[in-house]
Image (tube, rainbow, N blue to C red; front, side, top):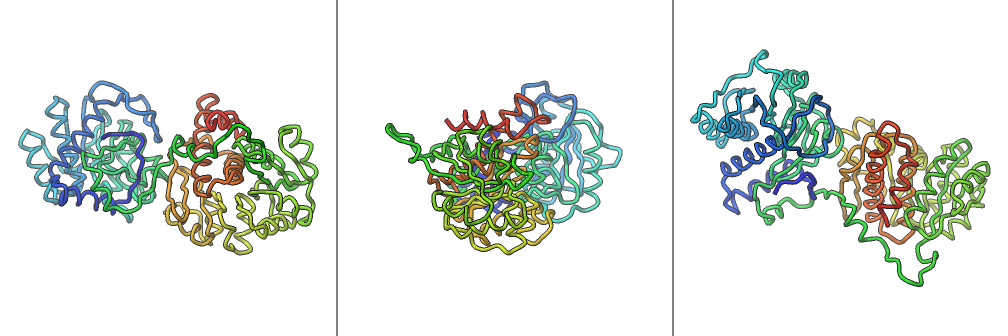
Length: 509
């Protein structure tokens, strides 16, 4: 099966275990799997239409096009190189001019040695790579390293990758672009910037978060006919969040229902000068389908909020005592949008922490916790840090969070007892019983107010009685797809957080 949208994402170790089970238990020989991988990559290559410019990032999917005038395959000594050798054999057999360059000497794995013999038997010439050998035309195939890297690249590979990236010719990466850590998405010094990446047997989780998507381009995967039973040896994998499935967990709307049946959400924030954040969060909460939304904010924002969203109730709150009856009223509380880090914000946050209600903590609520210490949060809570906020909560640098977003999200979940949404390219959702990743969204969403909209949706879903992991997953994919639909109309550059609201309403109906 070949697909652009995987449902499970795996580490390199899990992938190796599945591969071994396919060979040892399900009697699929390594050479057969390698041949199937080459065939899948060749068919993908034939389906692609070269574009005039080579820009990193996800592409819309396969397009029919002519065969390339030249295929240049760069092979490492392992099985990834073996996949490339058999791909070269298929291309040459179809009359495509083909060059094969060995990057690190002759093939060394048993299956790669056999692949080299097969390729040479039909006249494929294997050359050692030279600095002047690569031509800037046709298609370049990266079959150098695949999943076989975790540390810094050796100078030899860095030089080759820098030369590839200086070319305009599009690149097809086999399994993983060389230089990308397939588990984390981190760049190991430098990495191949591919237009397409074809993964085999499993979709590799590092391609979908961190720097991975920037280098992988349009991602495809093929299971090579490995039976589903082989995947059971891998243990828990990260699932890809799918909107249709997540919508099934929404509370049903029944005849005779009234607004009290769908939850009461309190939104706390909006210190002086930061009213926009609380307005966006309140409107997004309303769009989530919650029955009632109450906003606790500074008095200067009351008029603007009622003018923008008269469906919300608004209270001017100057001290924590005024907040207490609102906390008693609420089924769930959003705290953080526009909260600020001064005395008022601290008072509001600590009152919310003591209310024993499911909380959605974002923005300055997280920054205050990072300074004052991170207590266990009320049962059913969600936190939504971006990488900088996550770094402050964990007491490390942002680069450390981004180097392994999976570990960082899991550390935060363990420390807080909450479900964590680690925002960014490939947002992660981590709770006690669920690990998920969102592949939707676009760079235009890296703008002010987007996080407030996400918080509003997630908090509104919590108030409707959804479990924290359900609410987090649905909120993330709903927010991301609403951003994609809005960007399709106004473009990524001009995209505003408020542009998501009509699309949230359409997607959640």
